[in-house]
Image (cartoon, rainbow, N blue to C red; front, side):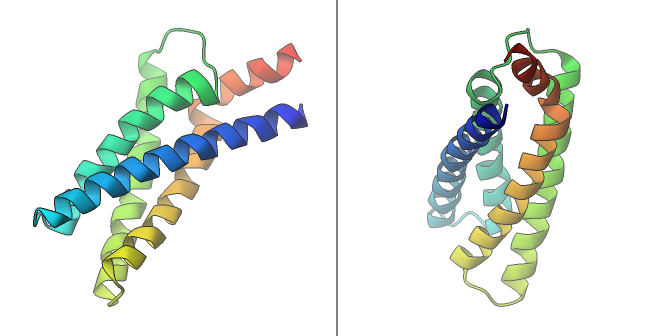
Length: 135
């Protein structure tokens, strides 16, 4: 059981790295095109959310049942909360005089923590329980 939890956490982190690369890539591409940082954050985070749902559902948590409205709604709610935290932290660090890179990095860490906890417990928690029961 512990071995599967470690594997799941590792898969979540791997997906998270991919999400972060997509988020940072889109963010800095838009910033280079002179899109203001807050709209750039909305676009870049949205691209990461789509990647996150697909890969966490299929690979991290290995959900076999068809997606339903409840799961999608919980995923959206967790990501909106994580996005809100990321958005507020990005704003606060920018107003505090930090560089854009430092601001983005710190805000991303805060959002990732919220996202992991919410996905692990609330969004895909039932699927993890089913995997653990099969062992």
